[in-house]
Amino acid sequence: MTIKVVVLHPHTGGNKMWEHLKTNWKLYGDMGLVITIYRNFSYEMLEIIQPDVIILGDCAGAPYQFTEQEFESIEMYMNEGINKHIIGTYATFYHQEGPFNRLHIYDNRRLCTLFGIEKGLVLTTRRIEGEITYINSDKTILWKNIPLPYKSNGYTSSQVPLHELKWIDETGKLIGCSKDTKILAQSENGGCVILERKTERMSSLFISHMPEYESVKKDFVDCQFLYNCILYLVQHNYHSSLTLICLNEINKHSVPIRELNSLPQPLIELKKKLERNKKNITYQSNP
Image (cartoon, rainbow, N blue to C red; front, side):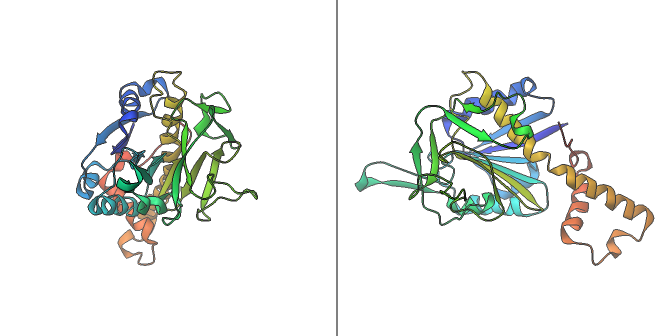
């Protein structure tokens, strides 16, 4: 069984990482990855490929600003059906470069809401002194085969809210995020975070630094981490698989699904997806 991953407009400094994971995923776990990088894409293309996970790797910092059509393609794909997942790293949302009188701005904040971040939040990037070290509390698959605390060899900067230059205030509250956004890990001063958002249709991870940047040549801890991130999101599909079992039982022992007018819309869409692609709907809960 494999997980289909699509990487859209990544920073060139991360390409080696994605190519490495594409051909060497067996070094990091048993679940196979099929990874494809795209510079040009459309909603129709995403519908045909049906990726389990979309990755936005430092897109604004690439530098690249998505077109209106590309924004719509990502939003439409992520908000339809179920079991959709997305990962963003570092300056996915906002980047500016050049002298003051010729400043170039790349603004992808329209996608912030997919990650539980306010799209109007003013963002910048901040240099992190020393190693980027994450403090984590939950024992999840994110940290499988990773020495703790997780010390990244990636790019030593973080995308942060402009005015506070960190994601967590003095009370421990997240800055500029919705209530359903959860901190999975953070650096000691809150300058770096790993954020999770889950809904009944999708889940997301935002990693505020860039673990994929030129880190393949080091000790591979970031390769393991990114592999784990993909599995962490896809394991949420397990709950949908249980729902499928219930749907199958309803089909066998009760009235046909088409007659259940009161069936919730997510379950109707779930049944449609099952009929379209039964082989790819279930995943292990603990790979």
